[in-house]
Length: 120
Image (cartoon, rainbow, N blue to C red; front, top):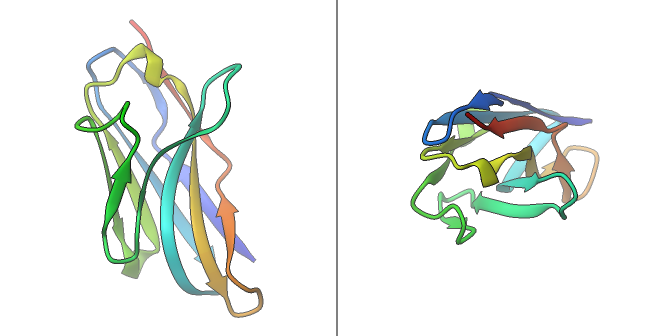
């Protein structure tokens, strides 16, 4: 069994910053790509960005230059640093990881989500 536990969401004013974290635990053999998605009310879930096990990153155009994804493989943890936040960044943010375990083949796992609200 694998768990992804997120933390760090909350209410922030426009222009502010937040840092989300996501820690994976369980019978993990290898974590490949880790990613952050978000889903705003009434909208489809969208990719915010992802990071490979080697540290290569990819971002949605809407967050480039404002958000940074990082990870520490030894801690099975990924972070999302969000700066210059805008009201349109308001959404539930979900951690995703592609993981091979001791009992299951490679598959995607999801966190429970953490809410980010950008409002004055």
